[in-house]
Amino acid sequence: MGLEFLARVQRSSLAAAAFAAIVTATYGGLVQGLALGAGALWCLVNLGILQQLVIATTGDDRRTSTAARRAALATLGMLLWFGVGALLLWKLPPMTLAAGFTLPFAVMVLKAFSSVLIASPWWPRLTRSRWAGAAVLVIAAIAIWALASVNAQEGGAHGATADPHAAAAPAEHGAAGGHPAEAHGADAEHAKEDTGPKKFQNFIGLIAKANHGKPWADFLHHYEVVFFALIVAVIITVVFVSAARHPRRVPTPFQNAVEKLVETLHDFVIGILGPKYGPRYVPFLGTLFVYIWLMNLFGLVPLMESPTASLNTTLALALAVFGYVHFTGMKELGPLGWLDHLAGNPRSLLEWCLVPLMLPIHVIGELAKPVSLSCRLFGNIFGEDMLLVGFATLGTAALAAAGSPIGVPLHLPFMFLALMMSTIQALVFTMLSTVYLLLMLPHDDHGHGHGEEAHHAH
Image (cartoon, rainbow, N blue to C red; front, side):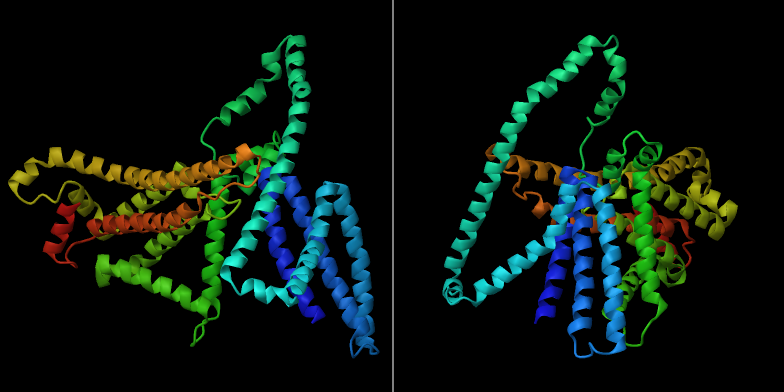
């Protein structure tokens, strides 16, 4: 029972530490978040080593040489781990690190208190009625909110007392210095950059902010969209390679989910391109859908960002589709057939006479395709991000007047809307890319009437 309780404490502490580190990094800075997470992780590892030491010294096989060797290794590991803790105390903020150290113990105390509370005789009487339980929760929430409001008001009063001296220093410095504009040129430029639309913080932005002015940090911040796109690509590669490496006759749930996704995309592409050309282009179009879909959803993960919320990413995807479609046209139709397609497939004398008019129109239409693809995807995903940020800010401001650091999660319903719209936008991008390929392929496989109908519908 003791080891089971310790295992539950470790799992709960790990989840609580991850959440607390993300919140601290977002509102207190990257270094503070790292210190809190590192402190909690150090304590959890130390508890694991202590657990091995207790098992080796109190277990049934404690008199064997294996138990003695395990106890010696655990003792040595604990000494080395204390050295790691001393290094953390030297490198990271000690107060935040100490808070991380104590977090697993706080979880342990809360779990012990809840175990005693549930085992008490009056707990069944309290939870027998849903209204009594709801009343207890409401009273506890009001008490926590009131305590947080008092702490926030005290902090605000302390900040207001210190602000006049802090605000006077820049003014005196500007009056004494001969070139205040030059002294604060970099700060003014940085403030000018921050006047744009705000997004949720991501971990690359926090790293760049903590190391502002360093060339590598500025490079990382400048190309953060590219790094997030690469992270998504690595995740996709790892997931699909893991699913395909050891296939089983009776698939696991993970393998079953991946195979179902591939089968659905295969049927979708075959349904548009037909059985002759469809299987050939399933890898490109299926990868395109999965890549865009995960990039759209990536911004909903804390400290991450959707690469498709940047026009650079969506334009790159659209240009890749544009180049692939016309490369396919050159390969399937030949150079003359490709030019014939751009000219509108003239066959009669009247159609040949209209070639000087139709050719520029078709070229402009082809050039407009990547523009429409990129702007549509960028506008929808960027709009989702701004909607979530706006309602999250509104929810925070709703209780800011009362001094509460915790706001109302008004953006929560729009998270589900973002899940739906991210999937729809990935599907629309893939479907239009598939239709563009259909219009470029020879129409004999689909029937002349089907090809002409698709062409005129476009």
